[in-house]
Amino acid sequence: MTEFEPVIGLEVHAQINTDTKLFCRCSNNSFGKEPNINICPICTGHPGQLPVINEAAVKKGLIAGIALNCKIPNFSKFDRKNYFYPDLPSGFQISQFDKPVAEKGSLKIDVEGKKVNIGITRLHLENDAGKLTHTSSGTLCDYNRAGSPLMEIVSEPDLRSSKEAVAYAKELQKILRYVGSSDADMEKGMMRFDINVSVRPKGDQKLGTRSEVKNLNSFRSLEKSIEYEIKRQIELINGGGKVVQETRGFDESTDTTVSQRGKEEAHDYRYFPEPDLPPLEFTDEEIDELRTQIPELPAARKARFVDDLGIKVDDAVILCDDKTLGDYFEKVVNGSKNATKAASLITSVIIGLMNKDNKNLDELNISADALILLMKKIDDGELSSSAVKTVLDEMYESGKDPEEIIKEKNLVQMSDQGELENICKTIVESNEQSVLDYKNGKDRAFGFLVGQVMKETKGKANPGKVNEILIKLLK
Ligand SMILES: [Zn+2]
Image (cartoon, rainbow, N blue to C red):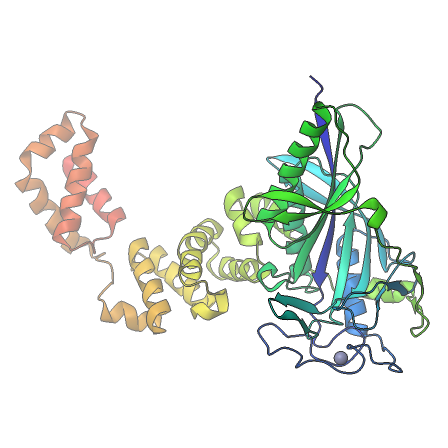
């Protein structure tokens, strides 16, 4: 039987996080707002209104392009893409046809330990359409989103599996967030995917006929739609059929795709240069200036955390997932000089608290300085790791100061040598059998004795010291 190879390309639409829309001064923040509240004659396509380009949106698009290793041409322009649909009141979208703001880039992804380089064809700017809600009594139009700035990022057909596509989309999301060009929040529709999928006999160079699936709005839909398309096309070919070029929609309830329109129904967009906007021109100096604004990107940061700070790859992945979290970690490392401990506290306790009520880091009220202070107390033997967790939990719940919590809950660890020695002696004297077992090589007996000391001190004895003292006593 023929072995097939899937060929996948991705188009990602990401909303640029400017304050205002792409061609007018309406607010670009309409999530959860009443319909048609952020609109004006420009973004609702009234006759005689002229668009004015939003400089911040262009800059953010360029920065994203640079971060994706794209070439930035010195000349770029807008074009009209004509189509009629009620979500587009002007009857055309202002997009970029042959002169995008960025092209020929690439993105490295890591899939199950294998590094793959994915080509990026182009990144162009365009305005978003409004949102339609179909009801039994008619279709409702909300133009709050109409005119929001979008960047469309088109990949080369370099992806070979659903896993690679998801890894690519996730890495892209991280980069757009790191450089501050998009919040890329998929639950708010700020990032959406169109895919094209074809299959070909392994080893063939010629591409098979592709189908497109549009408007996927989660990583899950992305993965499932690709898996379904690959399977569908292979079964079709193996059964003697032929894949037809068409646009398909994804049905989330069944994880299947269904035909929406064929090639013969494809739009003819009749692109032409946008007459109401001047072309964009960028000098090399302007492009270099933007280049300086790009922070260390997640992949480089992850490698540095592992190589220079010596933390585990899994922890590094988590810490670099979100720029704020990575910055927080770096601050704690600088203050505590203990990267491993900082990584373990943040990935376990801090992230645990963030996930508890789905909060972001700022909402936890646990500053990097507070974490540094608590880590110092562990080093000084004043607090146990479990007591630190108690303090952090309480800080999150009550917002109280860590010192106050330590005092209130009486969490200071018992480290007084004389006091601990006395308790250890009593435990050794009253557990003759365990002492004998230990001397006969039963290591478990030692753990039992430590446990007894901890019980006696209500968990407050410094375990390091208890170990030390018991070893000495049992010699
Ligand atoms: Zn407007």
